[in-house]
Image (cartoon, rainbow, N blue to C red; front, side, top):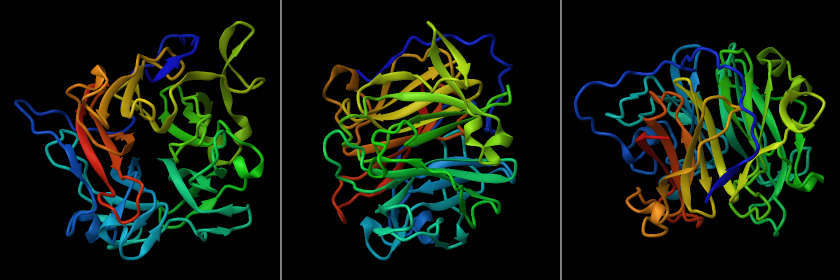
Length: 385
């Protein structure tokens, strides 16, 4: 089940562990954890107070400039169940303080670009050609802030129903904000997708694992499968790294690749990244350094579950997949007793999670039919990766 590890070489001694963002310590005694708490799509909730009635993804990231938290949604509406006005994608809600203990759920306290009035972050038109080719929507895959600049990696979707063997993307890109999420600009370089002639690009969707103590920004990437119907996805994931200043400059050619060359694994610029994990088709994925451990979460389309894995280093061997939240907890046996969420996807790791044995995951739920409830994100705490 799930992804299988490639012949990964184990890196040298790891640098001293340090959390990528502050996290609250656990208190003593029994704790009540969030176990599927809806964060939107309910009348009068904190998302509605910020102008977002329903949305999915809610990718969490740490806003290092002021110690707050951001959540980046995909396609969103002002009303519950995809009613009211279509806001667009991506959309951002923010939170003053995240309770890493799990005792209280995420509660949104302001929105971008204006508190109480969530709006689409990027300036583009849906179902139009914005100069690159026809695109339906731009879907966020991850967000990170460092050095005073915020970055969102996204996929421009050409079709949600690609034929077998095709991923349905137009392109992928990186947008940035120098005012902490109010206004956004696109880097001029884009990674061509399916309808631009590069089907199954391994740069379709990214996850920012974060800046390691060694000074490198580590990035995992894979084929676009936010549709969950890319039959050629193969669960393939690759790894590359880049110096933060080169990334900020948009010098993406400065990346170093984790590649299998001449019978061994090494960091190199002379060969493209090699596939480090493969197996079942997967959709959304998330990699974060939590308390010195690298944690991965992903939606396993074939297994119908959100799975997690861990590694000591980005370029070390990853643990076997562990199903955590499932679409059906009656089969197979590995799903027995797991939280059940029909029509699940997403599964993003909250970077404020206290440790690898107590992750917070943000899981989406929607049956794919417009205006049919629910269309929301759910919070799960205490997940042991």
